Structures are given as C-alpha cells and as structure tokens.
Length: 489
Image 1 (cartoon, rainbow, N blue to C red):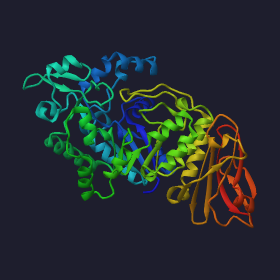
Image 2: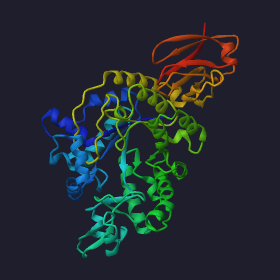
Image 3: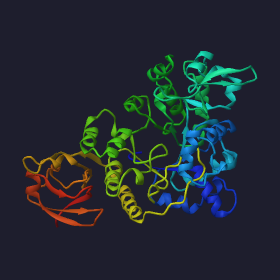
Image 4: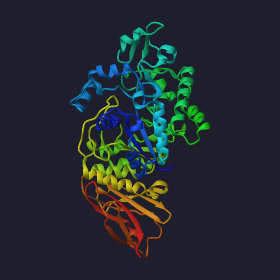
C-alpha cells in the first residue's frame, strides 16, 4: 500500500469517555458503528488501537506511587483520582486483550467490523521488556537480564530485587542506553536464544489478531544497540522474525518506533515503515533548510517513513506548533510520501498530552478553525495523486541578489498521469520570496492555471516565464499552498 493513512486511538481513554456518555461500563463491542463509518469515509487505511493488551497490578502500583509521574498526571488532570492511573500500556503482562475491554473475542469482532469498512487493524508489540508481573518472571527468569547486589547499590534506578518462588532475584529494568530504567518493566535478554524464541512465539500469536504491528522502541533490539546498553552482543532478531511472519502472512505490516539514525537499518531488516522523528524535530524547530536537506539526503526511503506531528510520546501538535506554523507543518509532513500518522484528537486541536499510564483525559473545546483545516487536508489526502503519484523535491532560488528569504521556502511536486500538483510552503515567521523551478517540460507557449486547493484562489501564469525563471512567490509567514496545475483552455 502506497502512502497510507493511519489513525491512532488511545483505547482506554476513548472507551472511558464512551462509558461516561452511556452511563455504564463499555468494551470494544460498544465502539459505535458511526465512528467506524466516519473513519472509513475519511479514507483512513489503518486504525491503531493503543494499549489493548493485559497489564498487571504491579505496574499500576508503580505508576501510582512514582512521584515524578504523579506530578505529570496531576498537571494533566487537576481532578486526578487513583482510578484514573491505569498503569502503562507498555508494561505488558500478556498478549491477551484486557478483560475490561472485552477480551480477545471483542477484538476479533472489532477487527471484522473494520474489515467490513475496508479498514485494517494495527496493534502494539513491545519486544524490549515485560511487566514486573509477567508470568515469565516466575517461570523463566533466565529470559531476563540478571544483575548483582553491587549493580543494585551502584545504580538503583536501573535494577530491582524481585521476589519469586525460586527465591529473590536481582534483575534489570527495561531501558535504553541514554536514560534510567523504566521501573514498571523488566529487561529481556536477547543474548539468550531461548528468550528470542519465546518472544518470537508471542509475536506469532499476535500477528493472528491484526494486520499490522507498531513495534515499540524497535532499535533497542539491534545487536549494536543491545551491546552498548548491556555489554551483550545478541544474534539479530528482527530480520529473522519478520521473515518468519511473512512466510505465513506475506502482506503483514511492521512499523518501527526508531531513533538515533537507525531508520535505514530497520528498513533493511524488513520493516515496512519507520518513524521519521528527524522530520518532526526539524518542523518543531522551524528549520526550513533542514527539512529540505532531510528530503534530499536519501539516507532512508521516504516511502517507508512514517510522518507525524503528534503521537502519544510527543506534545500535542496544537500545543507544540502555534497557529499558522501548525498548518504549514502539517502540509509538509503529510503531503510528502510515506505513511501519514494522525492521533485521535489532533483534528479537533486537543492540547493536553495524555500519558500512556492514564485512562482519562480532560475535557477540551474544539478548535473550529483547525478542524476545518484538517477536513480540507484529509480531502486532499484522499486523492490518488498523493497516494501513488510521483513525488519530487523542487529547487527554490533567490528572487534577487542578496535575497536571503528564499531559504525559508520548501516546495515539491506530485504527478500522476496528466494530474500535477505543486506544494509550496514558507516555513518561517517572515515574509519570503523565491523562484520555484518547475519540473514540467511542456510549460512554454501555454497559459497555466494554478488553483490553490486550500484557499480556492486561482492564478494564471505565462508558461514561458514559468519555464525560464520558475514560479515567483512573495508570500506571508507560514504560507502554505497546494496548487493544482492545469493548462488554460
């Protein structure tokens, strides 16, 4: 599937709001058909239901007792109650659907309802660690990274003493090499072949319940990263696991959460899509040149990149990007090739980021102007030209000598047969000018109409001038246009 659109739903939060609305406990079976119809009509291809898997009381206790986390929860929910802290959805105690969500049977019925609307189901897979009370901790402690009492004294934020039927154990918390451990998880040891076999068996079970998986912190399993973190060089996991899954499910989709310039590495190991955090960071910083250079670099396949302005790990886009900048960033992020990832609440302008530990969010007003913008953007994303057309980054040149503001502009084109679009964005808080070199070879001796599909304004341009100098732009801060280019009749 070329350039699909994915919609992320925080399952526990979404169902808690539905429960309050209906005045009774609800499960996945209670998700309204009207909501699924709406998402299908918006031309989404994938729905990602976050945090459906079983978590345990141990993780919930940690979430409720950690003072730094509680400070964040309280800032999000001033009327915070204990029951709002559900525990992290990434401290997984087992790959069965939580009973209060309706169990595996309810998920299977939801999947069929999605299929009936042409939608595919994506779920989480968390390979790096498990919950503190996962059955493996008691049954197979050898699956985990062991530690000594000296380790516990030296770095208490990275290790824990765990009681069990075989006596107390000291094990490592799950973590990445740059931060302290996650105290509601325990680290799996990929240097142990039995651990890899056990994880692969869990993965095989999960792929029977969906069409795609978002793999949490996927780069942590790479041999070089694991060795840097734990001093153990494991055998590669992802290439073997993905190959084995594809033997039975050839079209199964793997999406990797990945950072640290390891996107290409994971694409080469078989991932269909990898997070493009670099593009997000450049957009957040307002760096137009860095955006252009990122598109030019070619270090990763843009068609295999997952682009986003928010997800459960990032600030809400309405809070992180101011008015104008938000819309310009969205045009650049979602009209370039690759997977387009949106989070529930993004279209309405929600500003409060909800921790994966929480099961409730605050009420927020709808940003009507932003909602109208996203309605327009989604209409554009339904068009075949930006689904399976040809994308090309375009050159922006100074409008005159010493004109520096050209460097603030980013432009690219889409072509699909006779259909042509030009996307032009002034990604800066200042007025900017440039000439955009157009890639079309038949511009001369014609008059061309440029219809902005966002503002519905139309311009006519002389083809000879377009061919010789390019399209002249003199545009306001955060200007963003999507021009359909057609020959004047």
